[in-house]
Length: 155
Image 1 (cartoon, rainbow, N blue to C red):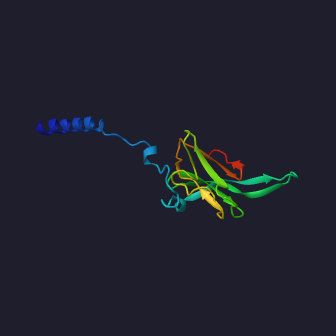
Image 2 (image 1 turned 120 degrees about the horizontal axis):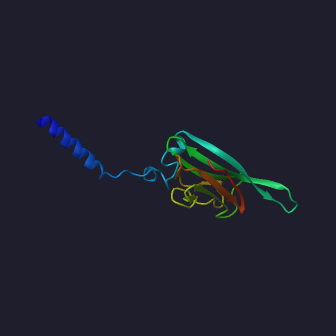
Image 3 (image 1 turned 90 degrees about the horizontal axis):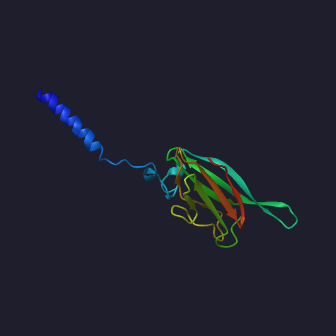
């Protein structure tokens, strides 16, 4: 009888104490605002969701490709980030930028936490900080080079 009442009291105490334990939300466990390269996520099961060219239209109406935008993801870290790449060196500071948008309204860009800054004179690329990108969230990216832009689909 003593063992049964002890077991019942222990089970009751366990149930009551579990009510006071707070669980972390998925966002709290994420890499939001961190650098995909310094965290290693860029090297752990990373892949490109989509690549879009960024064109400039000349005065004669022809298109010149300035570079491209990529939406990256890491299956290992459950994150996404954006990168913009130029085909030539930037002629002035702040020449290009990338942005990533998550379906809940959270955004990051190259100058946000975890990013490496906008593409400045002489540079060729920049990346955003990471955003948690596990179900139910989706992300899309946008990028601009000298005010000419592109965007990716939701992934």
